[in-house]
Structures are given as structure tokens and as C-alpha cells.
Image (cartoon, rainbow, N blue to C red; front, side, top):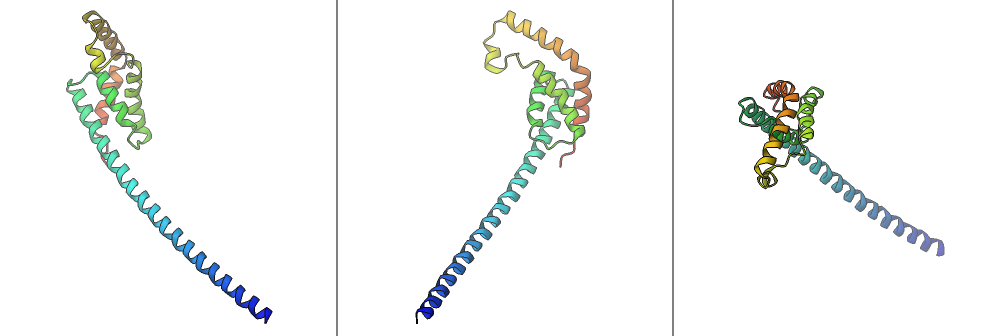
Length: 153
């Protein structure tokens, strides 16, 4: 009788463990399914962000070529947007010109900080910015022209 109780108890424990293992397996399967869904949604979102950033880069590059922006302003904007793009090596080279110019002029105040400057300081910084831009202008203009043809997908 003792061996029968042990057998019944062992069977009960085994069944409980099988049930618990099945429960954990189904939980794991649901978790994996949720994770795959989240990864797909993230991939779609990143693709949309990439596409939006590419369109914005093209608009900024066209505005630069039409002289609607300074090279420094375009460089700051394109440098920022380039971080949102899954760029090819060729595109990274084009973006690096803008990033270098943005870095070289990063000490020049913008927006409210610019407005707070007096006229002589604004004039001095404008001359300094223009001198820095002149060193990059050929590369920036060539890159801007190529960026207007940037693939959008």
C-alpha cells in the first residue's frame, strides 16, 4: 500500500509539474509573440523616421542651394537629421561634411542667445562664421547637391 501511495503521489506531482511546464511554455510563447510584434512595430517606426528624415534633408539641401539658409544653419539641421538615417557609407561621407561644419561653428550662439548679443558681437561672430563657412563651402555645396538626390526609402 505504501508503494501505491508513493506511486500515486509521484504521478500527481509529475502531472502538476507537466501542467506547470505547459503553463510556462505557453507564457513564453505569448511573450515571444509580443516581443516579435514590438520589434516589427519598431522596425516600421524606424523606417518611417528614416524616410521623414531623408525628406527633411532633401528640403534643407534644396533650401541651401537656393541660398534660403546659411551653410551653418543647414549644417546644424542636416547634422542632426543624419543621426536618424540608416545611411550608406556614401551618404555618411556626404553627412560628415555638414557635421564637421556644424562642429566648427558650434560656438556661435543661436536663437535667443543670438538675440541677446550686442551689435558688435553679432558682427564679429558673423564674420567668424562666414570665414569658417568659406573653408567648407565647396564641399557643402557639392554634398547638398548630391543630397537632393538622396534615396527616400
